Length: 142
Ligand code: THU
Image (cartoon, rainbow, N blue to C red; front, side, top):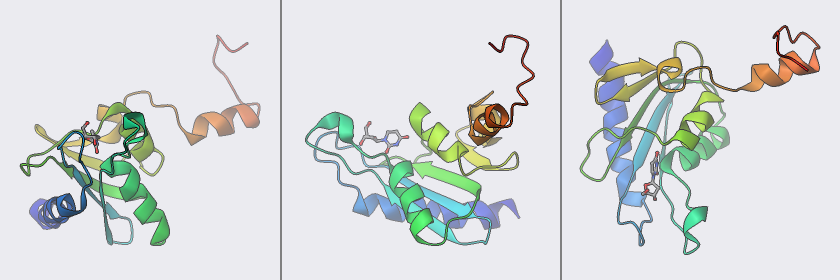
C-alpha cells in the first residue's frame, strides 16, 4: 500500500522540477501532494529578482490544490534537484498544516512522519475558533 501511494507522488514531485524558475539559487524544488479525493497536485519554486519574494514549491502547490477543487492533504512529498527528499522549510510546514489532518503524512529522509512530528504544537485555525468562541481554557490567558 505504502509504495502505491508514495511512488506516484515521488514521480509527480520530480516531474514538477522541470517547471521550477530558479535563476538565482539554481536550486529547483518539486512538491506533490495527494488530496483526500485521491487526486495529485504539484508545485515548483518560483524565484524573484527581489529575492525575499520567492515562492516555495509548497506555496505554488497549495495554490494549484485550491484551483483544482481544494481538499485536505493525505500525503506530501518534496524533492530537490537531484530527486532526493527535501524537508519543507518552516514557513511551508505552516502552509501545509492549514490543509492537513492528524493523519497527514510527509515523506522525510527518515521515513513518513505526521504533520505533528514536523510541526509540533502548531498554531492553526482551531486557535482562532477557540478565541472567537470564548472557550479559551489556557491558565495563562489574559
Ligand atoms: N525552497 C522551496 O521551494 N521549498 C522549501 O521548502 C525550501 C526552499 C526553495 C526556495 C528557493 O527558491 C530555493 O529553494 C533555495 O532556498
